[in-house]
Length: 223
Image: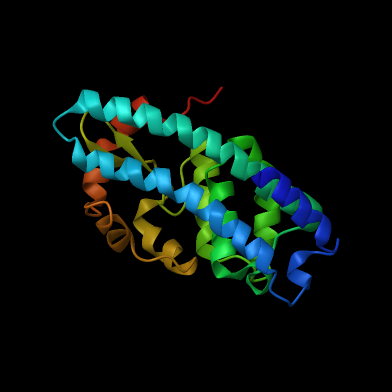
């Protein structure tokens, strides 16, 4: 039903770029509110599992597999919706879909496959340059694309959960000594403030010590 709804909405909107319009589109705002909920609900459940079943790793693993399976289905549907909007109209601005709608669009791309992310990378860069997307959001996408291609990230936003050790590790960072300067330039909080959400501290010596483990277990091997 949602696919039919989005198809109807796309037919009702003019073909010019959405951010060139000034009137809020209530139908798209509502649709993207549902997209946001679908994107975040299962991810919140997964985060809760990491604290609920700290001792029962077998149960946690089973629940995570179930959630990941459902997440892939919802992510695929949401990617279809957001891709349809971008392909036909460009990137919608906050004046048309609101800040929450803009965030929903970004999150769908951030959680999409690498080919989808690379397809829209320049679109999101243009939106960022035209003040239709926060620089911090684009920085997160740049980091994720870099890591998925086996390259170090620039802003330190990408972590990986290690189920065996029940903790997060930080993916490789380019020039970590100047990390906070780059984060500030993108409008992001300090690395220490960012890691506080994950109950971690930013310790550059510890990060470097753990880097070989992360490289060998989680980094894509360059061909």
